[in-house]
Image 1 (cartoon, rainbow, N blue to C red):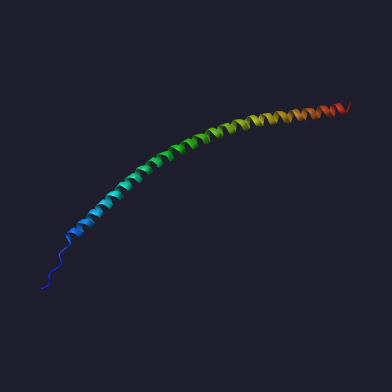
Image 2: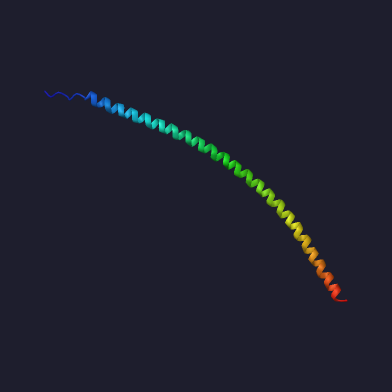
Length: 93
């Protein structure tokens, strides 16, 4: 009769201990990375909102500057037309 080999209790317990410590380490690493990811994600959301706000503000100021520029250009255009007409009138004298 052949006896079934008995498991090596010492060897198996060392492997189990290493496996459980490695699993514990990986679990802690995973929790750490998850926490870091949450922090980075929150920071990204905050910066995205800040960027959107700055885009709105910049758009508003550009619109205001363009409006002022259009008014000034129109004023300069009409001044030029007036000067040209005045020069034509004076040259005809």
